[in-house]
Image (cartoon, rainbow, N blue to C red; front, top):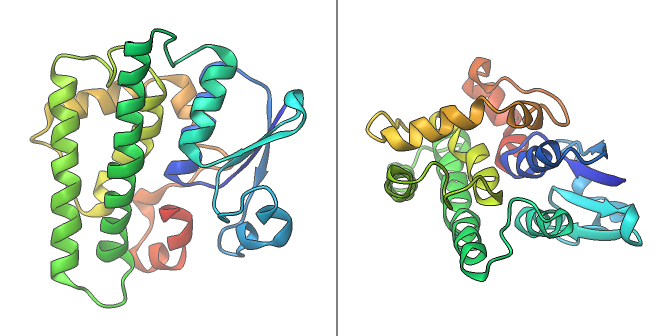
Amino acid sequence: MLDLFTGPTPNGYKVSILLEELKLPYKVIAIDLEKKEQKKPEYLKLNPNGRIPTIVDHDNNNFTVFESGAILIYLAEKTGQFLPADPQKRSVVLQWLMFQMGGVGPMQGQAHVFYRYAPEKIDYAINRYQKETLRLYTVLDTQLKNNEYLAGQLSIADMATWPWVRIYNWAGLEIDHLPNLQRWLDALAERPAFQRGIEVPYKVDRSKMTTDQAQEKGSKILI
């Protein structure tokens, strides 16, 4: 049995999607980000960075893993799924996983901040992060032109990237000019495990959220 400490954010969804795809039993412990539960001493003992998600593997001496990418790798290696054993194929998956961890997530996260939450609209910052996020999207679109999934077969790279890209409009972006990326988004959205994963720990409908509500709940969307 696994414990999953999480909240309704793209980084949290990565892990719940993988757990749903793996059909592993897990217990959800919802972390209230607005109440700063992720900064409480008892949680910091599990995750010194004070963010979500975190897992505790009770079947492996209560081994604890934090950082979403590290959790994906741990679970993929534990089960032998969604991360190939072949060194070259494995490397391709990890390259695209790192692309998300080091690029898409940080850049799109900053686009969210300056487009949605900043008390002062700073055009330079908005344009900078929107432009860079779109550049990264274009890289994804090119990769997906001749590949059904980012690394050829469905992998943890897709599960890491999809929860971010699916909310492109939250960063004020459009992707009509990126048909391969849109096809990939739509295909993954049809997978039952992805559908279930983005309702952990509970369902959030951002499409009906006003800008003021978004500012109030900003921490839940960004982390």
